[in-house]
Image (tube, rainbow, N blue to C red; front, top):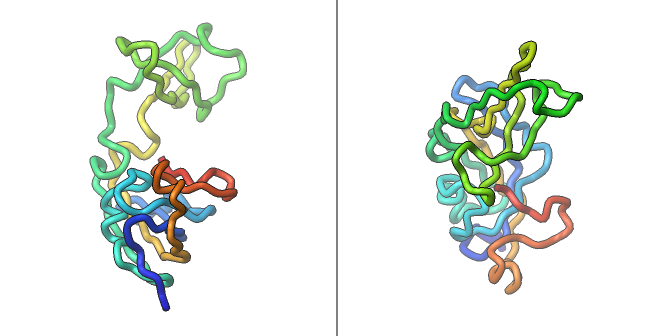
Length: 166
């Protein structure tokens, strides 16, 4: 019997992500393991497309920016003075910080996108913000979730990252 993807099942997907020009954005080296059924473990449009699929079936879903990592927000780009940051600094490094005007509880990840003499550009947007993305996935495993996984709303297990996809 080939189990189909349904609510409260743990689903494993082999996937890759390309941009709208077909350029590879994420090769999906690790499979994506998530709890199916509206637990916000995966983008809703992908979850919808996987619903009812069986092991071995594939889907291809195009996500607009607002269905994936959001629109690009210019306000999340900040220019800091070089001396306010660590000495060892290079493009691509990440820092956690609060956006200007946010309360102390709200942190986002800033990436260094440019370094010029005494200024550093920090971008708080997700690297894929503002992009339309095409997810190609194949269902490779489906199993009923444990009661604990359903209660917690996410996969448990020893798959390295706990099955989280945020």
